[in-house]
Figure 1 (cartoon, rainbow, N blue to C red):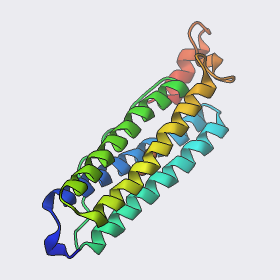
Figure 2 (tube, protein in one colour; figure 1 turned 60 degrees about the vertical axis):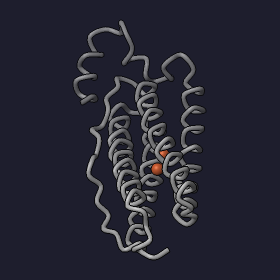
Figure 3 (cartoon, rainbow, N blue to C red; figure 1 turned 90 degrees about the vertical axis):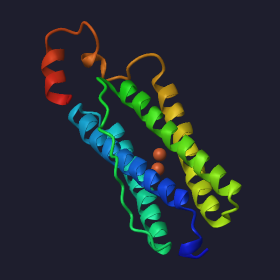
Figure 4 (spheres, rainbow, N blue to C red; figure 1 turned 120 degrees about the vertical axis):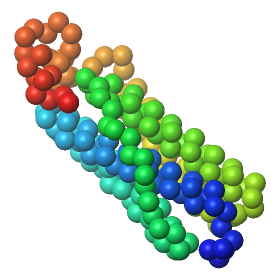
Length: 172
Ligand SMILES: [Fe+2]
Ligand SMILES: [Fe+2]
């Protein structure tokens, strides 16, 4: 569809999508470094992979906006959320992924209402990616069960004076 046929709300939905994706990039990039400081290289690698996936989503949105003749302008980067352990980080990430899922769900439904099939398909593809992220996150949380994973026990409750030192050093 040509630029002058684009509903202005679709451009707003693309801009908000870019803000959410860049928020995810900042959050997962930070977490990759944070859990690296905690000595958890496997989780650090996993967060780094997620950072790249979210960066690729942001890039797809930028390219799509440019193809529509619109200037990409993410305006509301949310601050990185804090948690004292891996499970807490993943729970925060589930909230962010939920925001992404509901945004793309709303955006693709709006495009159906205005019969904008091209943009609807664009949002639908991102919706499916974020739904996969949610499923992966839920599986990861399930792997952790109700307990902290091995290697995190020293950050747990009642583990003595080292905890505060490490918390100060490795948290933010
Ligand atoms: Fe994403
Ligand atoms: Fe995601």
